Structure formats: structure tokens, C-alpha cells
Amino acid sequence: MEEKSLILEGLPDDFNRVKSKIELYFKNKRRSGGEIVQIREHPDDKRKALMIYMTDE
Image (cartoon, rainbow, N blue to C red; front, side, top):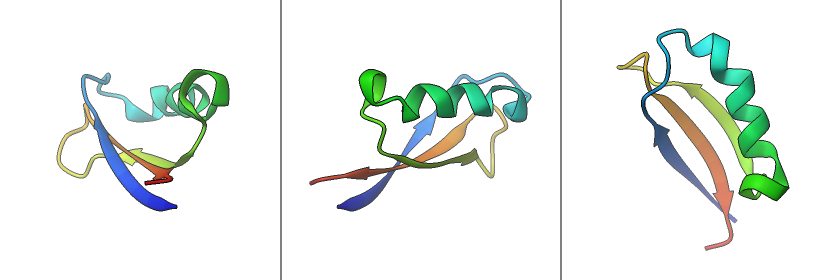
């Protein structure tokens, strides 16, 4: 398995308020595959987040 990252854009200014909702959505196997390792605040933009996930490729 290989670790990859994806940038989530258009988030509210308060990342901590939506982080748990984003994690619940992307960790749900039925909705998105559930292979999320970590979601963290983007270092340069508060309205973005970095999502780290695993892929079989």
C-alpha cells in the first residue's frame, strides 16, 4: 500500500469545528472506502485541509 495526500478546499475558517465531521465521512467504508490515515490543517490556508490516505496502487 502507498500513502498519498489530497487537499480539501472550501472549508470554514474554523477547521477544528469540521474536522470530526470530515473524518467520519471519509473513514466510512461505505461512503468513501475508509482508507484515511490522517486529516490535518493545511499549513498555509485555514480554509484547506490535508487528507492522508492509503491506496493499493
